[in-house]
Length: 304
Image (cartoon, rainbow, N blue to C red; front, top):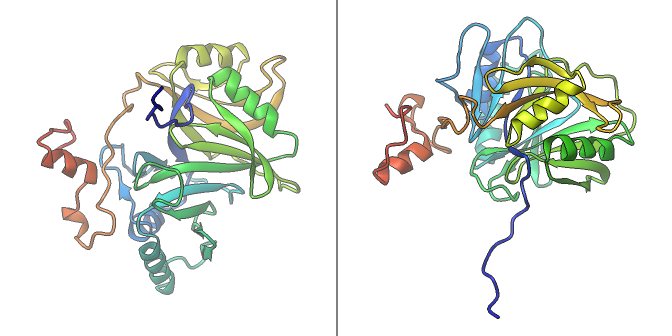
């Protein structure tokens, strides 16, 4: 019998796409300096942007960065990012730091073995990986979010996401620590890492957002446990209580934004500037849109 040529990839399960992380900021000027001028990401021109809202595109993912008068406390977790221009980012951020633009913030940049680590001016830590060094299929994106939890929490958290969300995942070692690796899309994970000696952390301003294939089933289960914080209409809702599916006991608190495939933003193309481009911002193009042009495909109403 001939061997199958099929490439086996991990099953995705009920959570199909980690779409964004949200945290509050105290300055949109600093968002432009750090995310756009430093990291080279793109301000989303189609998301509502006003004095209170801003979104930064990172491939097929986003940062949602509302300014609501309360900044996010320094976060103990880490957001993992894939970029094709690691050295260029380091040079840009170091240059901005030399100009004094991060003065008075917790900004810090460190080169580690295999990645670069950035403490953003907002107190949220990010880990930058060069494209091709992780099993992530895109040039630019957000492959994981690491969240520290108390010892003994990893297995119950994984059980919650498997049973309520129909997600896949496994218990793994991450930097020598036990972790619940919850699959949140093709080669995307939220990793709940058991960590001793955690400081108390108010994560009221931080949430993860993702799309699920079984939206109605998930909403019913969360409602049954009186966990819905907001929403339920328009194919989106929020919950914070990660609970034991058998008895409803609280395991961990983390705000989750859950969307269905019928949500208006599902599969919406996101504009991304050409990586490593020396062109001015005004003439840079989304690589996916440019490829579609070359193939004679009209990518949709976002093409001007």
